[in-house]
Length: 167
Image (cartoon, rainbow, N blue to C red):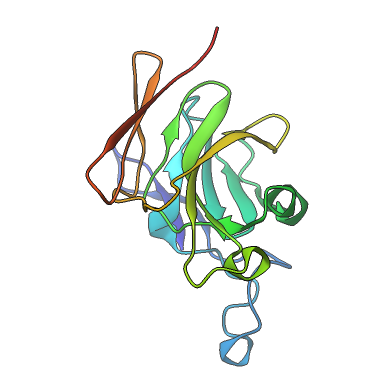
């Protein structure tokens, strides 16, 4: 459940608990029509909506209208041989992109491990503009860091990767 509470009065303004059509039928359907884990939501830099890249979905809660919605990103993920976005407690973000970690489809690649990539997810087109595969390595930290037009990601081998956005 996500709550909108007035910080001055403590009053409950709104709450979101269900999302018709979203969720899994696993566990006798108890997860159907429920929001994904709330610790994965992040406030967009515009401060007008919450979002969560949950598996193969983009889940949003518009804080102005109060509407909760989701969009399937299955086709976008399949274009890059990704199985889904890795669960995360937060994201790096700028005006145009969300930066996070995706997991590649190990079965389609014929591998016995799950390759991981850092991705730039375009907020407007809902496509992945670029990704970098950590070949022979893995992603150590959950949340990429963004500062001064550079994106930082630590790998499992303690190698710091630095990506710079082209103008």
